[in-house]
Image 1 (cartoon, rainbow, N blue to C red):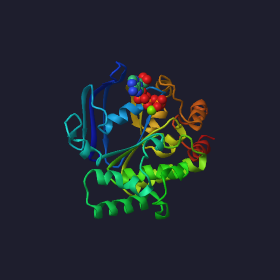
Image 2: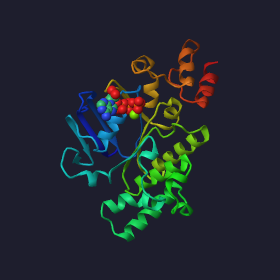
Image 3: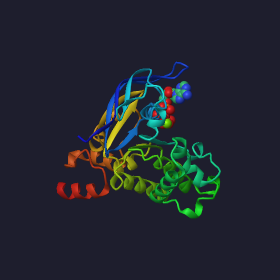
Image 4: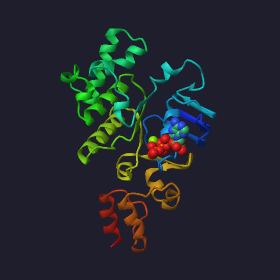
Length: 276
Ligand SMILES: Nc1ncnc2c1ncn2[C@@H]1O[C@H](COP(=O)(O)OP(=O)(O)OP(=O)(O)O)[C@@H](O)[C@H]1O
Ligand SMILES: [Mg+2]
């Protein structure tokens, strides 16, 4: 196991109106992991991710981020440099008058010098593929894919180890989805970030996430390798999740000698050749 970045112990979270959203969540997230957080609508994914960056404080239990308990007072400025959270809709996150100030906002807010801010902005923009031609543009005039990249760049500028992206592919076509997912994969593989995605698209989970955490009614139902998770369709059903079609096909054909945990078309071809 790699170095632990985030530890969640016996976490309950209840909204002020009394809605219980998380119940007895225990997990830990390590360095350089690629994790998918899945589960039906209302199962607690967004609530959990907001606990994982300290935005929400536990009702019971603890969340420890790189040694800092999120219950401590006055730690939010430290926490924003550890875990970045990209909102489902980048428009809820972008509020500055141009791309440059958007990316510079976080570094300025933690009191870095203007020279450091400049360095951070240029670095983050480059990694996120935000060209300097757009620096003076109002984020509103960019297409959705680029707005999302600006949102990600503004997170990268804080140099967090962990980046949580809520629904990276919703509202995007196939090409844009692959583009953003390959970009997240690059941040994981080449830049060494831990990536946590929240998604309803099981193909994306199968193609990109090494580990999958399944939530159902605020509880962790499964937490294992993506392959192991998708080979347990009965448990997934409790939270109205179905494995990707290719996995379901292999599960329907186990009597013909196919394994239950095929994740991709390539694996299917291989398993099929071996079975016949
Ligand atoms: N601000 C809030 N006040 C009260 N209850 C809330 C609030 N936000 C979410 N909830 C409730 O908390 C539970 C968990 O919601 P959450 O948004 O974390 O689910 P989710 O898994 O992210 O769902 P989705 O897939 O629809 O985004 C649900 O019962 C939801 O209705
Ligand atoms: Mg959500």
